[in-house]
Image (cartoon, rainbow, N blue to C red; front, side, top):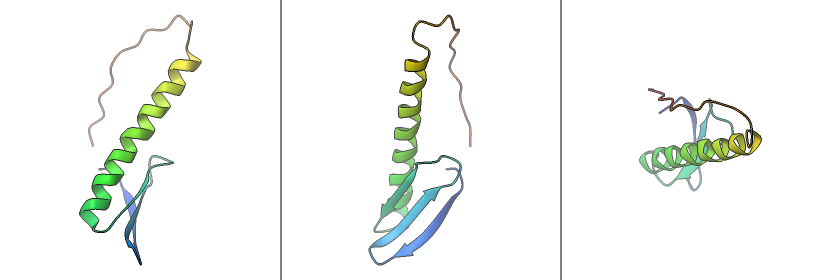
Length: 70
């Protein structure tokens, strides 16, 4: 999991994914917040991918998979 800031709140734990703007999550426990942050990070990446595909519509590009290991 990328770095994130952890804050205790009245309702549990709040996490902010510092390397991926828009990836924030909450949970009652740290484990739940981490799982939620992982899900949010995937959602942000999927949304960014969809926006990029819209921008490239009709363009002559070569696409290939990119794996990121953390």
